[in-house]
Image (cartoon, each protein chain N blue to C red):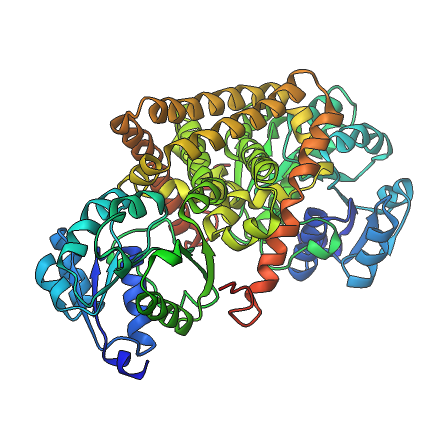
Length: 301
Length: 301
């Protein structure tokens, strides 16, 4: 795959993830030229200034000029753009970075060029947005989920696998339905939990000075995701509505157990609830240890 | 207050906070000798090995030998011990580190030695516990809330203020009732939110491997507090039951707004809910900036 060193890449959406993918491909020498597409003029200009991209082009010219197209816009926009991009595709490989996968797969389903699309989801992000938020050297060891890989052309899949592995990412394969169910649990609900926590505190604690003085690092950690932007997250909840509602119902029911233990002063039950939640430590600590291992150990091609 | 450099300190409870306070006082040369009390033998032994304390003594001998006594046990235990310690007190100053204050203040109310007690709450912690979890050089710039300061003897209050300021901590003064109300918002609910989130994921996502592979840094951040131990937190919820229930009800009601916006596919409302929660950013960012300022700016004696 030596010839791929001269890859021209088009990034659609020059925000946190698009910018971070651009830096990673560039820093690893996996692309020779990056074209940017974004209808936000300030983001476009800044991405060019920062050196994230080499050139700005309109969508159609950017796709035509590319070997690789990375869709990094909100997931509903991505689902709208994907069939249009597939229409323009001849040799190009298209991938994406969205936090939901089913909506995109359905948007491409039945398209004669469906095979050129490789649905992917890098499990990395921060609560910040825009090209300034893009970071370098952060993707090594990060899981990237590839969905419905049998529906992608072999060469398209091989290119994406090669690039992501070259970035040190750990590939996990999953069908798009399972992806969205699992993600509702391990990511989407955490965002709703934080958004609602922030609203609770802002609603009841009217004195900002008090929040500011008293908020501990624990509170800051729990509420961190409430900084996440609605442009990204409303589309995710839209596309994963049923799964997110299932988990949200379960979450409210778990909170009611805490409420009931307090109301009934059933401290044994409260103790059980907390000890049961402590089991998450085992999972997270294992994850932490694993980060120190060489990448690729959990690849399951 | 030069003579106080030869202070003998007794720390009751050799865990995360007791150990961290011990290190801080020792490292700043604010105490010449530290006596430890803990009915957990493993913790006692380890605190001695680690050099957190100089000597282990039974409670009564440890109090008698001390100038300063720091109660760093779970808050219900602290409320039980406090009157016993006041009974043994002549010159000693007693302070504590508990996440609730009203229960302790009530436990000491009317005691002839009440003035020797200075209720305090350092707004620092991690999700870990035990003497191994104690950390050095972490208290500078951290808020420490002193409650009901008019009920403490002037010399006792002055000693605690001197010591905490010498550690670079920022003193905030508050009555104990307000403390517990505010803390329910900015700390206690965040713990319940995390405990319930961990239980939700553990309940529904039976494959640990999947949580492990997919959990993003966002999820890890939100669920971090679910590692916190029940020995510390059941007593906090016990002592702050009414406030925590109020906030928990508000939190569930905020989550129901998210649920309703999803069920009705009211994306404008969902967008408003998220944008409203984003306001927490202003508060947290201000806090982050302030951490870089010299300590003491927000002291309000």
